[in-house]
Image (tube, rainbow, N blue to C red; front, side, top):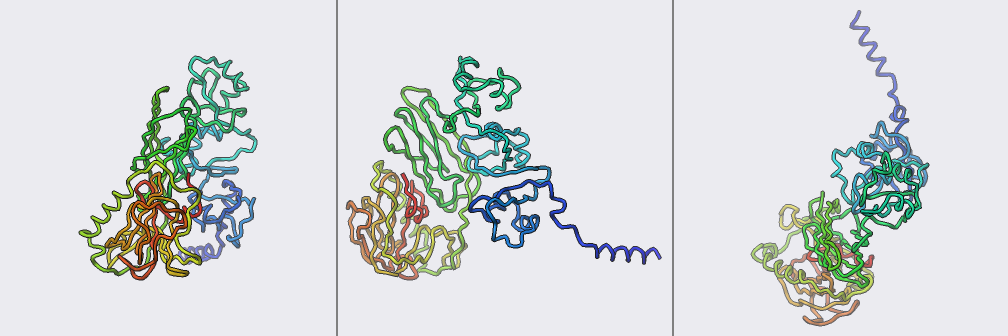
Length: 460
């Protein structure tokens, strides 16, 4: 009798429909859809699955997301109200961020599941609550040593008690000299190092991404000497005038995602030395695998490839301070173009693991055999190599080089000064190839980078 009862009860329970996912999620935080948002982008931004996002919002067509739509974000039980995300900027830390968004450090770490303040890496994305009732806040110059609180408040056109509250202090006397502060009346363009010799420091884009070209820009009030390191590479700075200093650096296409080191030591004859360091987030470029390739075995023999690679590195690691190019780079072939293989794709040769990557862009023969210089520069190498075939290297200045490989013939000589769009050779099939094509690669401070970026973006 009892056994029959439990069987019937179990069957009845199976017939009861499960409660919809969203029924118990009415208190989940809300994200307002912005222009350009997609379900996949939002799921990555908040570290939730796209399937959960679709289910909790009962989206019948997730491909259509109206701007302004309010989406519940699952996985953040206990967090309510409207939330958004922002990228941690260079120099920001937990204390600055908590004051800027006006929530406690503990609440900010809780929402973002951060176990240590040191996990606030420049370039990482954090989740922040939005309180529409708060006035915009801007970082303001800190209190100078010896400056009275009253004088400071007058200069900032601010109330001392309001300043204390905005900066999470119990009383004005807790505002300390040289401590970063926020105000509703400050200059929104101010950055915390905008005092003394250092006026501004920028690293862009953030986060770092495998295979990308990174620009480090520093503005100072006087002539300085700068030593810097990014992702293990010594930076080379050149000046653009008006005490602005630029360094360009490539991120290796197979660099380990995670954290990359960034540090600066800046000295001048007039001020105290300035040092700064902060880990930067480095993300994958999500490069796919090319079909396995089979080539002449000698072109992957390290006895041959290693000396050739060392020769190339010695060529492209020479830093010429002068910048020869201007504007965006020129296509190295005639249009219409057809790209046969893309930069960064992982490669296997003759059955090897996919431990190689494609170091440039391959253009097939779709218009003519003409090869053109992508930008102004000086030819520093023009000769036959085993792997690269007939190869030309052009120094564009400021640590930037082009490599033009597999040519049928070379139309320039070492020492020639070339201009953007100048004919420099013909497409061929020399070296390690499976057919005729032009391989164009770019080096930035000794690292190969995505060449197509240089056709679209103007680097300083």
